[in-house]
Image (cartoon, rainbow, N blue to C red):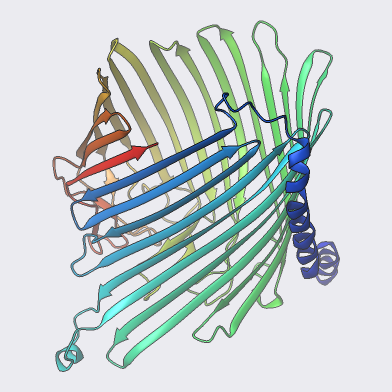
Length: 527
């Protein structure tokens, strides 16, 4: 065990390696705009109109429940350079009395295209604030004003990339960084309390891709590395700190054989190793310090209107060392195994598809918001989902189209002392029907109905409740009218105002109703 961790630490990138790589990549990005003036294709003539193009988009929406949002976006293309920016604001009163949710986001990006490659960067920031009135308590009667619980969440992301074309090879590298900040204030009988959480992740991802042909078989090969370092601080003063390093090797190969049946085969492999803080070692040992994922897919074109495919995959997810009921000890790694076969028949006028799928989950990582003030993450017992889905689409007339979907799923826990109960809030049967109409003068309309049957209440963690949620149907619709550069829309969800359930952490308790009927109007201006 100790020898394995010692060897692993040698393989992990040193913290300074990403810092050096960051500086190199940023220097390349700063130096290449001057070269872009020399290497891009000659600028189009002034009368061409394609060398200097500016587009913009403004969007505003109003809805019931105190919901409104505003978004503006602007993009510019000029001589191989693309710039884009967007800003958005959203407010929602939510279904809870006295609650207000605010969200603000900003996105920036730039890309330069050269004859032998391209490079660029992007940056975005997201801020969320949620206010709740403090729960009823005797001490609140002594206060002049009722206090509020406040939750703040912020995400900052930035990335830069460089890509180079050399013959049939594509060489590229991308450097990204993501920062998260969360703060919560609570009002209680003993005064207010505060909780803070912050994390930072840096990732360096070099890639190499090759296109070729061997014996008449087209090949598309990609090899890459993912080098990542992650750290987290939590607690009122940020005194609890954890770090994690990882390195992943990935390989993807796609083969196109051509011929009458046009068979295609895709194989993907990923091996990842993790280096944890000594305090974060899982109780079972080092079984999740190494994780493997793979993906195998194949398809055949048996007839111009008939194609079949099959795929199998195994993926993983590791705990982000967040809040768990056992303190800050990481959870066991989640593993997902999937298999699926399907067929599609038809053309643009009429088509039908059927797929049979199976999914097995081990140590599924979920978040239970009903535990404590912040909630806790945990591992579920082994489960599986087996089912079949049928989808059809047909053109009823030049302006009318109908889509129908029926899905039957058997989702249950497996290999457990209380074996057999359905997984909570997973419908056994789901049927949907949607009708589309495209009229003249820029008008369009679509409406649909969705029916769900046989949902089980929680709880997920002890599988002790077999109560069923009644079957229900929900109806939604949307009407759009285009007037020149303007687009006006009227939309409604849950038009029948059915009170169905979105979360049920307890058995016939802690029920969270989904939003009731809601109407929204919006306007979009594009130039």
